[in-house]
Length: 101
Image (cartoon, rainbow, N blue to C red; front, side, top):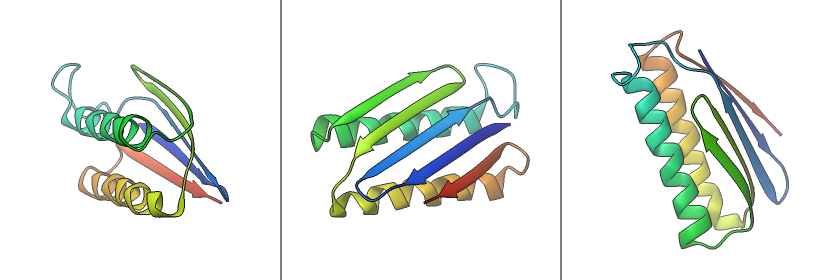
């Protein structure tokens, strides 16, 4: 199971992910691939396009993002969370999301 923790702080968001969905064998797992691709998109958009400050580490089975956000960044972060919730609902038992403030 992929465990996701999202901490929404006043001017910062911290996203931590650990695990694999075990939905399918390695190389054919659409749940892991979907989450991984969307997470990479989020990093590229926030760090490269919007030039936000922070740090990140993405590796197999683990991800960590700590980013200083501005008010208009909330829309893409909220969309990412909604995407994760959709995966959680569509593929039960593959993903667990904990959203804290």
